[in-house]
Length: 178
Ligand code: NI
Image (cartoon, rainbow, N blue to C red; front, side, top):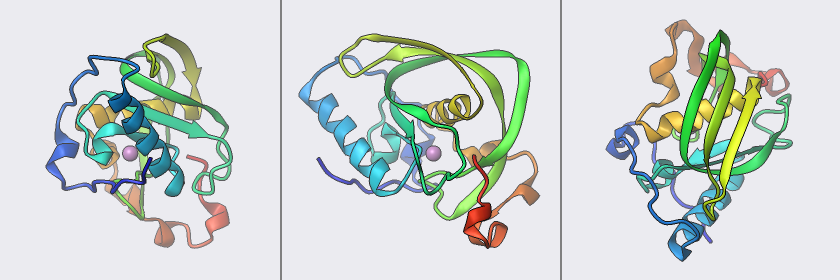
């Protein structure tokens, strides 16, 4: 297990469409997910996608318990999600601040679907099928975007709502929940 270097916006691998995982439960996949886990925790991320640690594969992990970067966020169970498929439910969207380990120090307001069904597989190939809302839905949409070469700044509709977090939120206690 190891904390890996997180690729930052500008690295071409972050713009690729990642390939599906072909084999579950392998030593290679376990190693990759263990490294993603170590890296996410070391950086207090809410989630991380395999391309961010340099592997162009359709695997993401996420978890929100008490996260200092998201102090007011509702909790999201630890999940390893492989080969995800999203169904965006309805037209309702909400806007909230997002950050990304590949875009360090910045935050931007992004509209995401409020209601989401997601399906995929865990590390051993067992199916996952959940219908979720709110912050959980937002985290999954953000992470799965990484598998399609999309970084959240590409979804910021108003660039006046994009900037450095210490300028936007000089009082860390006022950091928004998303
Ligand atoms: Ni991200």
